[in-house]
Image (cartoon, rainbow, N blue to C red):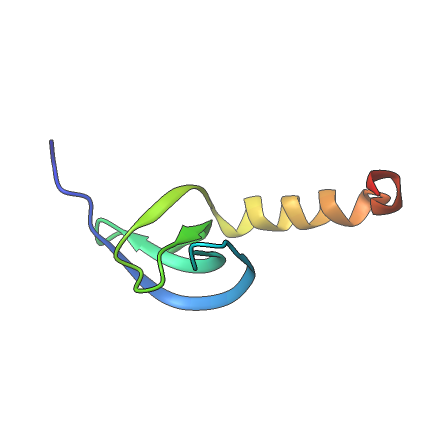
Length: 77
C-alpha cells in the first residue's frame, strides 16, 4: 500500500476538543503533494495521527455553508 502523505498548509480553526486532547479542526490540507483542500477531522495534539474526516473543494465548502445557513438550528435544541 502506498504511503499517505499530508501537510497542513493552513489551520483555519478548531470546533472542539475531546477528553483525550484531540481537536476537531478545519484546515487546508495537501494530501500526497496535491493542491490543498478544505479538511474537517479530529487530530491528535501533535498532528501525527488523525481520525476519519471529510475533505472538500472550495465549491463544496461554500455549498455546505449555504446549507447550514438555511437550517433553523433552534429546531435541533
